Length: 175
View 1 (tube, helix red, strand yellow):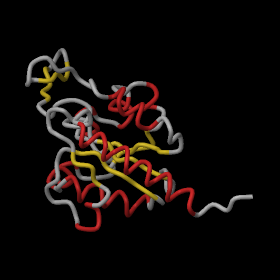
View 2 (cartoon, helix red, strand yellow):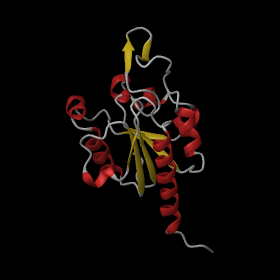
View 3 (cartoon, one colour):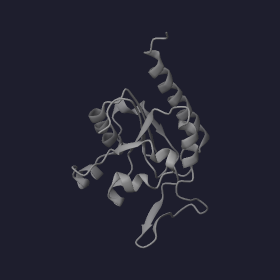
View 4 (cartoon, helix red, strand yellow):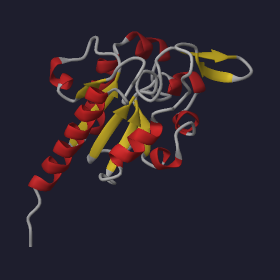
């Protein structure tokens, strides 16, 4: 398990594409509504946002991990630049899937933060319900349809990533 460092907790639905995603038995997941959207349509934006921060790792905080059955299968849906950053998920095989699914997303993320103990962290999610008070400042709430492409969410992510960079370098002594 990856501990310490700088982590980005990443939901898929409502972040990298619209939140209304369904799964067909033979053909897999698709964006049901609104029309004209595709799965992972905003992933390239996240690649660009993270490019200046090569040490930021990703923890998947998406139901895709449970639905697809593993972190590896969920991460495989991401472009290579994001996939290479994935170090795990908030859900793992030793957990009770039903109890985990009943918890609000913020509680799931906060429990993982307590387990991994990152030096700095940020979470991207379209669900703001049930987040513990101490975790809310780390959340960038995205638009359920526009995800991270919505201008205020995009700006908030830029600012929070820059703050992570500042916090990380503040403790380093210059020679």
